[in-house]
Length: 239
Image (cartoon, rainbow, N blue to C red; front, side):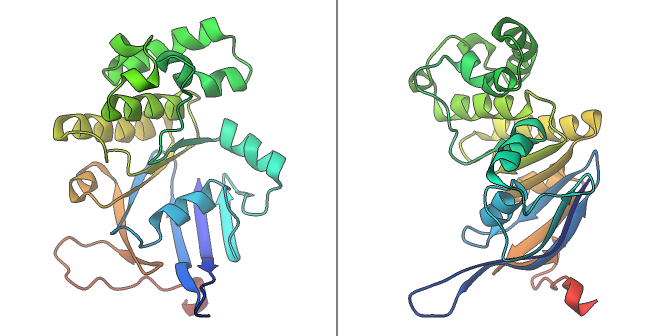
């Protein structure tokens, strides 16, 4: 479903030596899998997700989703791809202050052409599953950070996306809620045949994924919990 090939994204610096945020990264995620990209802040995880979401373009490499190259999409096609194919859970929730929680959760459904009444009926069971159905009519400012996060997750999952991208989705949740959200993301991928990529620095999240990689200094390595020094996966140029 998702095939990332030799992906590179560097940022220039005042000193002249570029920051290698994503440096020759290659990996695959099959339909129904949830894969973790594990690493500390600043390791390139969020940049990698932004590339896969077609929010930014790579310097080189390819991103294939369902066999289609998406890394060179124009702005309009990239927006259409994110609306219809991608469920994105970001560290910032992007909730609209003037809308209720449930109206925020159905934004993508309405944007894809569904009537608001039908969209609310569709989203309500998911809000209940996330434990925020009782907060549906409240404004984002009346919700806790954890409740806002779960509304954002509901919005991401509302369209049954073929690709789920989650950037630290449990960062604002307590342990019990974190486990429930991680279990939900894993179940959604398996039940709906969604390819999921979870970036995290939480080691507990690794117990809910099918495979895990470690990202360090823009380079991807196979994650082995008992390893203190993780080997780097070869780039396509090295294979």
